Image 1 (cartoon, rainbow, N blue to C red):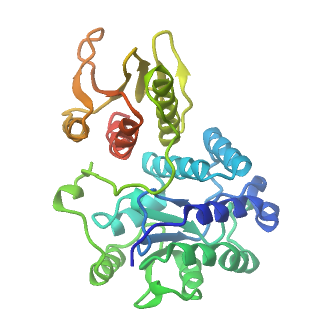
Image 2: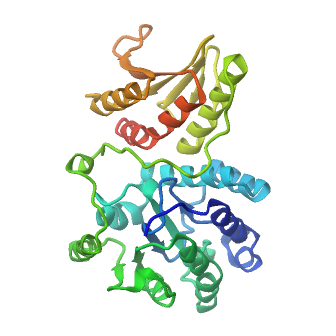
Image 3: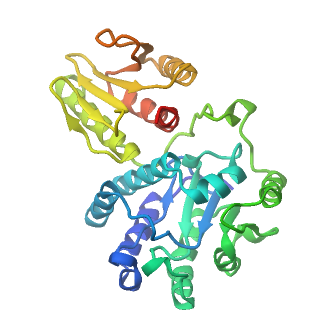
Length: 351
């Protein structure tokens, strides 16, 4: 089964977690953490389910701000921004559960933007303690079950026994075959092979061979989730494009824009993106990693979309190479955003 996600209801479930008195009462720092759903997720897709977020790593200030905005605005745009940030943080860290378990299991079958990550218990526990039976029961009934019903995944991959048991008690299309469980802090090769074989047997399409490199050639499916709202043309329209670009860069990197004399920067040191606004277009320069194959491939795809993009040196700094992208209309921002995941992965190679 495939189809469009009901993003309004998904957003409502995320806000429901932030509103939840039980979760706030039992959460470390009274701060529940909603799930994330990739913008290219479609009904009948792949869902990852873990037990609960670890409390030994505090959420960055940027993430806390995004949660405050989601709680305040209760909007699909705010949820999309939270999900984008969460995915970027998971990959850029990378999270142990992703790198050592989920990623090896789904590699070649789906990229993060095509996945959803749910927790049975949507909050960190005090001192990282194992969730109680009451917490697990509440999370399963009030938060996990409604989300699985909305996402209708064809397959669910779980980590640890508590997550596997919770999913097993929720009826749905994911129950038609053996459970897909990854136990242990580091998933064994046997467990990973078993999960991957089951995904193939269920007809879940694997990516092409070119998508299975360290920096896969990702072309996400068209998003049905909201993008930054930009419209119009001319000076006002360009300012909207520039604002939307900065918001999207911030959501991906987790770093707020920093104004400079001649440009606005986004990212940690070394800076990831440099945004300048010209009279007839918005220029963004991405820091990219040699030998620049990823950047060149992105530039080619953007060129096919009718945009001006090229990999070239910065004249003022010898030996400094960037991906230059010019945006002239709102549609250009949507095309560029589809490349953010790959550009972010490429940037991580420099750190």
